[in-house]
Length: 155
View 1: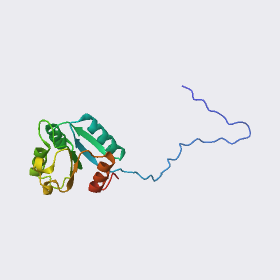
View 2 (view 1 turned 90 degrees about the vertical axis):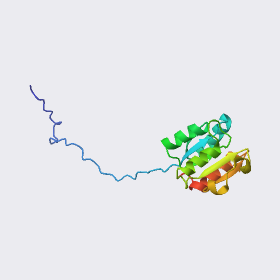
View 3 (view 1 turned 180 degrees about the vertical axis):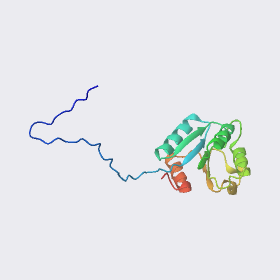
View 4 (view 1 turned 60 degrees about the vertical axis):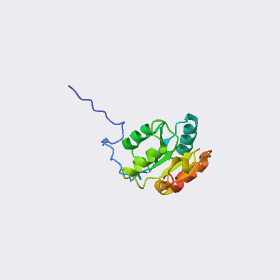
């Protein structure tokens, strides 16, 4: 097999082609901390409106439509905060709160968004701490503000 040697144009010295020297650059890697929110709401429109508002604020939102689904999703991916309706199929919001607190998740913020009263739900304020109770109707921007206060905002 023959090799071809290319000569430079007349009058120019031969050049040696070297592999380019790799450039070492310092690049800052931006790591984004996100807040994972478990939104437990059986009313599809309310779930969509709240999920959209929280997502736009930079949070990762996972929606559960009933209490049992919420419990499974909670254990699959531990959220930073739960937004919870009290009137749910399969397992009520109060039962979900009692189970989670009973499992030792005492520092998990829970924001109850419900049309029922605290007395009807039989939940003491201390059980929600850290967290709060919001009576429906709730404006999405108010929910976002409360979530920011509880988790320090999406970073």
